[in-house]
Image (cartoon, rainbow, N blue to C red; front, top):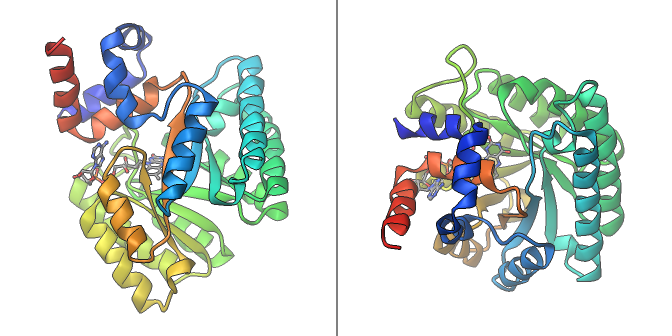
Length: 307
Ligand code: FAD
């Protein structure tokens, strides 16, 4: 019940100002976000790499309505690529980007976002790393997949994200699996209407398994992004049945969520990538994490009450 309310609040400027302005929010945000500055992200990256994990970095930002902000976001990612290369960690630390941070919602936004992200993808490739395009709400899927396809012509390692809650995703998974793409499969984190998405968790989970089967038996590189223990077990089984070696797919989890499980899978020889968000624009990301799990909200409320 609370999830949809929190996802609606994620889009409210008033609630954003309220939540962001209280210093009491900070300790709770710190659980999910590596810090506000680039050095914070690099520190978190080094720590995770030392635990035999790999990383994908998200420089937080989304839904920009100002073309200059889109350029600033692009330049922030270019700086990140330089720093990863300088630190000698680019091969094990990739990037995750949201096209809405690069101007996708502006007039002519598709082309603007494409131009901006192409610069980042080229810089990442030159540094020996890769970019995955995060997936946002359903209205952006066609545009994001089209940009992904165009980028892959020159940089086939560029990844896409598919969300199992969308009705269309099985078809997208079938198509992308046949092209040999790197695909991160998630359940989906936005509030979507019943016209386009499954509303019941059981349906979303079953769709996840169907899509995972397509990806595991396909030509590409599946990135299994879930904290759900049942789906992790299903992924292991499907990978085995498809004859995939341990380096022919990977698990992905979010920073601060099920850390012990991340290390357990890595100790078993699995590739595990942690999604590390950093930056000042953490509000939307934070609210989606609260919405996913009511217990997080209780944790947040408790931390407010005990001060
Ligand atoms: P759930 O059924 O939600 O959770 C299973 C279990 O995991 C829970 O019981 C709990 O133990 C734990 N858990 C899950 N979420 C939390 C949490 N917030 N706090 C604490 N514990 C939790 N979504 C998009 O729409 N677009 C993207 O581009 C995208 N990228 C992602 C990248 C990565 C690496 C990951 C892991 C997720 C991404 N997501 C993205 C989010 C995803 O869609 C889900 O909202 C999120 O992963 C929760 O779903 P779940 O598969 O973990 O299963």
